[in-house]
Amino acid sequence: EVCQSFRVCEGAWLDYSPAMLIPQKQSRIRQSTRIEVEGGGELFFREILAPGRVAHGEVFQYKEIDWECDLHQAGRLIARERFRLRPDDASITPLKAPFPAAFFATCYLITDRCCSDHGCWQKIQAINSPHVRLGVSTLIQDGWSIKILTDDSLNMAKACNELRGILSGLLPGLTHSDRFH
Image (tube, rainbow, N blue to C red; front, side):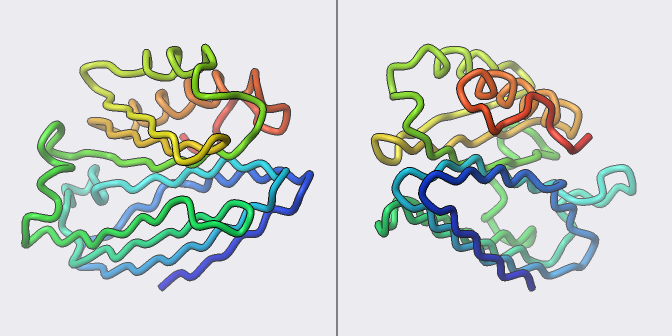
């Protein structure tokens, strides 16, 4: 079980992009995340979930993943993500529909450096391909949710690096290269 909490103060910047979570066969994982971003704080938060140890033939062979994330901005809840994935029921069907061994990333961006009609969003949408499904939702005026689904880890790395490359032009605290490969 992992319980994590982050707080970004006014004028501060947080880039949280850990290595992907790779559940092993028969594992049970519970992760709870709480993020608080004060007004004037900036955030790029990205987590990736692998379908299992693909190279070992362990695709969706974990017992359960219980995942939750609450994102607060200026004291207001702006995103609540909850899912419980169990390979023995229909909960993983949406992940497997486009790709049988889908990798999933969830990203949150909080910044006042761009707006919903900024040109970066067209570039981000252009990351979509036959191997990558990416969608963007506006949470609030200065906040966005970005979801990525790919057919394998290499395409996930490529999509995440393209996303960071686009956003690094806007956000001085965000380096172009992602640390996972």
